[in-house]
Image (cartoon, rainbow, N blue to C red):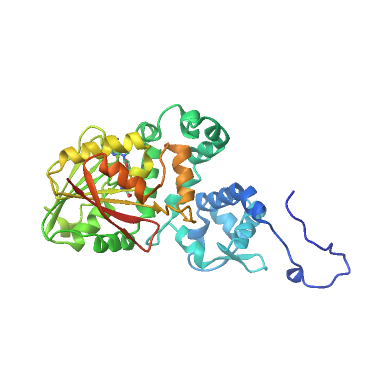
Length: 352
Ligand SMILES: C[S@@+](CC[C@H](N)C(=O)[O-])C[C@H]1O[C@@H](n2cnc3c(N)ncnc32)[C@H](O)[C@@H]1O
């Protein structure tokens, strides 16, 4: 049972309710996790954060503007206020807290698409299957949908667009810019972003390094929505659609592989790295950008992502020795691992 307040309150107790401790255990947060996720989805689906862009509003007003019912909306807002997303002013009005600002659709770095993706039925149903995944090793996604994750995205264009938009929102411009500055790039030559999504990182790399040209490579549905068509980069990029398990554009000087290896089990990573190595000349560089788990088992925030990979793709987060092993078996030397201020590190490797 969830923990109850330690002392019962009586009608005569005049102490302010806020003085009464409301103990909660770590178990509460875990058991109710999906309730909070669903509440978050509800307010994003109904555009509540956008309606609060100019300041607080009453629940009545919000309900009228969003086509929802006042009372259920008020209660969901109250729950999320307790989690720091909204301010509950106690007089029937709610405001958007600092931590809720990125739920708005119109702000730079908006996380709206990411919330809609990770609370989508694709992830909810995958998570529901975790007890079976733990027993059998089969992903909840495969059990629920009968096809691999990326095949599903290819056959459901709306889901595919949601995924691509979420990946773009998870890597805002400043994060890509920081990576583009932190990674070692030559003054000239060609950068190939393998499975580079819509090209947010490649765009930042080309902007930061004016001597480089770039190739964005991904599935056809994804490159169709690329973001490279900005005036200042004209003539410095091209887009290629294909399958990373078959072939990738050859002759690049630097290959980028960001948040790709963690999508796949070892045998698929070996196939991907072998395909890329085949396209590279001796001495060309590969930059693998992924979380790197501590080899000593100490805590790392990417263990949550690790379980997301487990339940959807049979992918995994890895330690540096595990990456080094995959790289060594496919013709690469791992030169160094550079930590970044974000969740990810850059593993710099050379084709040998
Ligand atoms: C986790 S996303 C990462 C995207 C991008 N690198 C980023 O960091 O935002 C994985 C990417 O792999 C692409 N992908 C999956 N299977 C692929 C395949 N067989 N061939 C090419 N790209 C693939 C997806 O379309 C998606 O863009």
